[in-house]
Image (cartoon, rainbow, N blue to C red; front, side, top):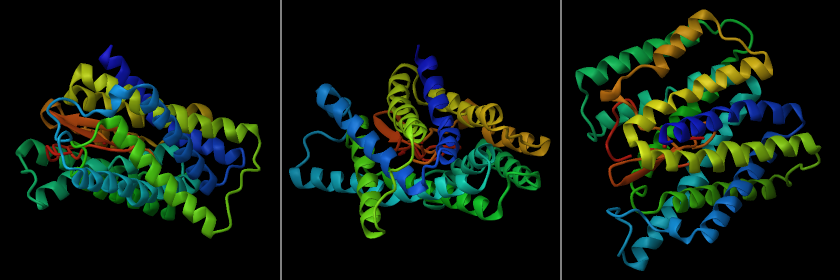
Length: 337
């Protein structure tokens, strides 16, 4: 059951880029997509917390209980800031890139974030580079190079690729910063705070820029609801439920199903196709590790929206929001999407 829940979560996260493309085709502007997605997801998560009070409490052994009100307030402020700054920025970059390039190629480029997290963790002294992790980094880097070298056909856009890499970098920073709060709040509560922060930033931007266009038809609302409900709320809650039953290593390995789902759905629904070089590179990026070097995925944004945890510490990802920093053997403190 746990494995099935993790696969369900990966499939929901993987569908988000395709839902986004279909929303664009239905006339939904990117700014409207982002604001409605985060606003609706935040409302649904707070509704879940209202009806399930037990989800507000951190798991036994977490560092959230018994803290002074001032320190708890600081943790809440950091969580809101993660959404208002980190997740809102990452999601904006992701959906801006989605306007310019194929969903399948975008997913492969975004999925380089585990390599960045690992390198940053080593440089920051949070982890050490073992031979196995070094081999995983080489494989992932080679795979990324193949993806880019094979991107000569339709669907590749230089600015889109740059935005996708920027989204991966932003998500990397988001994961490393989230390490300071992921083990101090209950996962669903943390996800709700992050979504609320992101919705607040995007709402303020809409006010400054003259409002949000909501004049698109029912098809646009349908795909927006799919992004908010399926690729955000259901994806996060399924991942949390699966994580409790399988543990972080198995959940992380199963999460590699996500870009596969994106590529498959993009082929079926959008008529996209990857070249042989891109498929080979994607395989290296996605299958770059074994159990010893398995990453612990994200809950952020764009496609990085997933939560996870190691031991007593909860992490979240791109696509839901809070992610673990342990990816290609990243740091034990910390996902996604």
